[in-house]
Image (cartoon, rainbow, N blue to C red; front, side, top):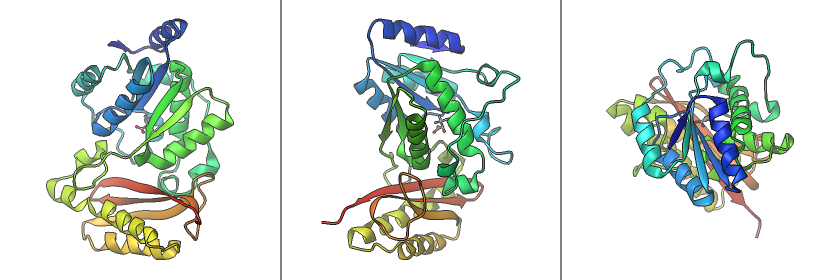
Length: 284
Ligand code: PAF
């Protein structure tokens, strides 16, 4: 496994693979890798001849009061997991390699960044779009793998790739959960044992709404109230938002029809957790 800290280094490696007609998959990450990331890497390995994992805690996607300084990191664990999973190269640049000074360019999909996490985290998706565009240009992959825990991120990046004619296929991968339903996230490491236990309420609330849709409930207000009530029943949890949107423009819907994303975020102490489900409803 080759570890590259420079854009030129990883680019030369990927170009040598492509010259040999090998296919390349990229798994963009911010490190502190867990089983969710492992599932993306395994999928990338199964579908490509070579896999690059990028490990870069991207400063431009953190707001001024967010957790950039304390974002969890474990380089040795990340390297050994990547090695074990057969990653061919890790790209691990320093911020100055990605954002040399001066740096002025912005990349944004504003329409899709208004609702859901975009409303609570202004500028977040602009930072994600910028870094992922750069990572695509640097690693020139055939396919790129994203977890659906960050569903809004996936839909925004899919739009970005289509609008800018990027020659890369985005592959959405299912959310990986703990046995008690909590979606895996690097930020789960911030939770103390009591918060960790209480954090399961988010998935419980979303699952209850999903089951209600299965039974025929289509009214979004009823569903969102149900989720909010269940989260409110957990004294340690504070709901940030719960919304249902269609999956093209990410605009709010009033009835579950076609493909909808039902997503929520909550605060558990100082930790913000997100979860969601995508529901495809078709009239029989
Ligand atoms: O999902 C993430 O970990 C990050 O947002 C990403 C896609 C690696 C960009 O920094």
